[in-house]
Length: 247
Ligand code: NAP
Figure 1 (tube, helix red, strand yellow):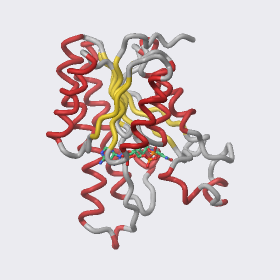
Figure 2 (cartoon, protein in one colour):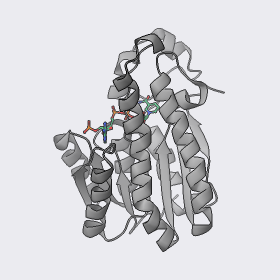
Figure 3 (tube, rainbow, N blue to C red):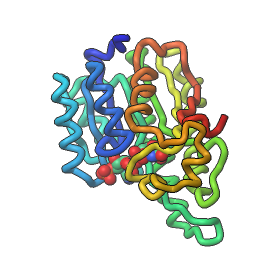
Figure 4 (cartoon, rainbow, N blue to C red):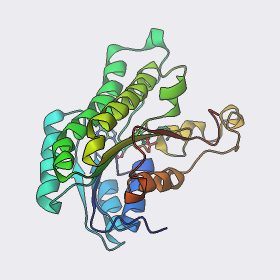
């Protein structure tokens, strides 16, 4: 299937590594120009932009700590100046600070909420008027199965990811009549830097019916579809991609 992303401009937060990198490459492979946002890993972000550009599209890396609302708004302005429009926003940037509740410091809770939830809100707010005005757009939030079912040691992370689902559905309702969809993907265990410590963990793998971690490319294929014109009638949805873990 041709996803018909030619000429569209995509913004992917946390595009330097892992799932975000795979999404940048999948969108570029389908013809979208890509703004690769990252926090601090400039070298990887530049390499991600180069990999996108190798598909024959425009691509550029932008440092953007999404928890900083001024930085998020300015980055969207810079992307608009460089690319002229924004059609797709993927809120993928995320961090973990896992601890049981009784050992979780205020900073552990706040940092995770600030990046994963508040950061996504900053980006959503920055693109909202553009997409509403152009009467088209795709917003995709990368949540987690932890936001659906909870996870011991992740009260901060699960709260941020559950919050993203509420935000997704609210934005979907606000923007539906304007031709803008807003959906969430809830991955299970995907093999990235974030889950490195679980890669060889037999207990983790035993809990996954397909008996392996997912790959970033598998998440990216779903993301690219949801960001395409073909997915115009899907909005406010949360799609699990977890090897059957939560069925
Ligand atoms: P990852 O490999 O750790 O990559 C994280 C990305 O987020 C990097 O590009 C990083 O940029 C960026 N980032 C970190 N802090 C940021 C900040 N303050 N502002 C902007 N960007 C920031 O993570 P991943 O595993 O690919 O996860 C991607 C998303 O999927 C996250 O939202 C995560 O919660 C979610 N998810 C992952 C899994 C999984 O199993 N991996 C499961 C469910 C959900 P730098 O390179 O510059 O540090």
